[in-house]
Length: 364
Image (cartoon, rainbow, N blue to C red):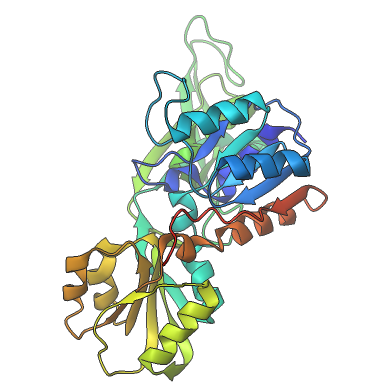
């Protein structure tokens, strides 16, 4: 299988446009036309992970945390990132990362945390918005299906778990072809009326380029008429963090014990106990200290995240139990998301879990 087949699928399944502006998800190292025999999924790319990939015959590493966050002007091996890049290049190993887009996607990191805790009635803590556009195009009736299927294949028409979503309305278009044109219908210099269909569908911003290319390639007109409008709609199911309910309330200490066992968290930091039971839980994989207020506003009894700053614990103020289970621990199941996505799409492709614990933090 070619690398571009896998990356194209992942770019759409975990939309790159969902990632934060500072992030760098996507292909980090590799030639799109490279033949990939098998992949290794991991949280981080370290020397031990690269050695493991070599030993297992994997020439693609798919990680949660990107190798590259900032621009690189020289590649000399002077820091960890450059050394890992050089090692990957030397051994002809491609590296792909899905970071904050995997946090935000509807089947993402926080939702996986909720699944492990057995939460129900899930919804995003902070819904994703301003990533959708509406595409409107006018097509001759006889070419509607050709154009519609072309733009669907390019990534248009997704609404939540539904795909190929569109709306059509019939009407009459008019135009007059000028000199130097080669009109599909009508004659040069004469006003022409044509029965057309108005096709509307939604597109993600990261897919806009290839969708418009598919539209232009499949449309019979020399100059297709189309419009793109920005939408303010939330994207169903997508967003940072999530909120859900335990089947039955549990005491706070018991809830902390659950977290320790499920996430293998050796050193949970938590705020002062409120004395209330835990029923509604807010979660955010990775560094989520800035969303404590959102967790409180959601009505959650507990907020589970990582990298929470000292003064943030005062924000709880007997309103909510804050539990910092560790960055690695909160994201450890992201490899399961990546594995399941790939195997469902490419059931005969070899995907392996890394056996390397890449957590750089140790507890005494």
